[in-house]
Image (tube, rainbow, N blue to C red; front, side):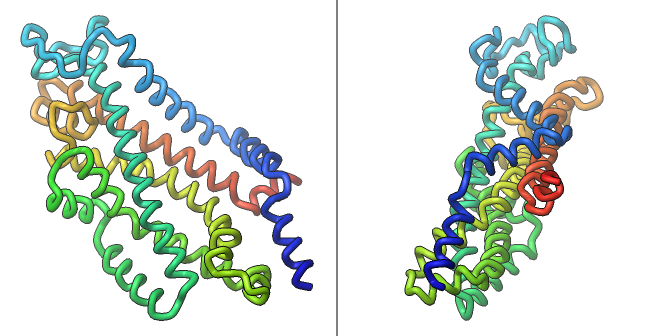
Amino acid sequence: MGMLTRASTTVSWSASPTIRRRGVVSRLAVRKTAVAGAIILGGFAVAAAVGPLILPYQPNAVDLERVLQRPSWAHLFGTDNLGRDLFTRVVYGARVSFLIGTLGVALSVLVGVPLGLLSGYSGGRVDLLLQRFVDILLAFPGFLLALTLVAVLGVGVINVVVSVGLATAPTYIRLVRGVVLSVREQTYVEAARAMGVRDSRIVLRHVLPNCMAPLIVQSTLQLGTAILTAAGLGFLGLGVRPPTPEWGTMLGEGQTYLFSSWYIATFPGMAISLAVMAFNLLGDGLRDALDPRMARAHAR
C-alpha cells in the first residue's frame, strides 16, 4: 500500500511537465485581457532594454534653453523644468521602477515562503506566534508599513526595495500557510510520514510544489502593487534619490507645474497606470489558467 501511494504521488507531480506547461499557455492565450497585459509589459521591457541604445538624449542632461517645452516631434513628451527630455526619462524610469518591483517581490518571496512553510507545517506554538506577528503587520496598510520602513532606513533604491519587500512579506506568509494547512492533511503526505520520510523532504517534494501556482499568481499581481508603492514613496520624496529617473519621483516633481505644464506629471502617471493595469490583467489570466477547475472546463 505504501509503495502504491508513493508511486501515484510521483506520477502526479512528474508526469508530462511539458504537456502541463503547454496546457497553461494555451488557456492563457485564449484570454484576451491577459494577452493584452503581456503585450503591454513586453512593450515596457523592449523600451527599457532598447531605448537607451537608440534615444538621442540622456535622462539627466540639463538644457536650460529648452525648459518646459510642450510635446513635439523633437521631444515627444516635452521637457521638464530643467530642460530634460521627458520621453527619455520615462523610458529610463521603466528600468528603475521594474527593477524595484522585481527585487521587492523577490525579497517578499524569500522571506514569506519559508516562514509560511514553517508556520503551516509545524503548527502549535510556532504557528501561533508567527500568525500573531503577521496579524500585527497586516493591521497596517501596506503603503504605511513601507513608508515607516523607508523613513527608518532612509531614501535610495536599495532601501526602497527592502521596504517594499518587507511590507508585502506578510501576504506571502499567510498565503503559503493556507496552502500548507490544506496539503499536509492529504493522504500522500500522511503516507510519506508513515514511511519515515524526513519532514524537510516532505516539505520540498510534496508541500512546496502545491504552493507554486498561487505563488506565481500572487507574485504577478504583487509586482504591480510594488511598483505602485515605490511610486508613492517617490512622490512623497522618500523614494529614489533625484536625479535618477523613477516614475513616482517624476510625478512628484511635476505636481508643481500641473496646471501650467500638465505633461510633466501626466506621462509618468500614465506609465504607472499602464504597468499596474498590465500586471493585474496578466495576474488574473494566470489565476484562471492555473486553476484546476478552469483547466477541466477548458478540456471539455
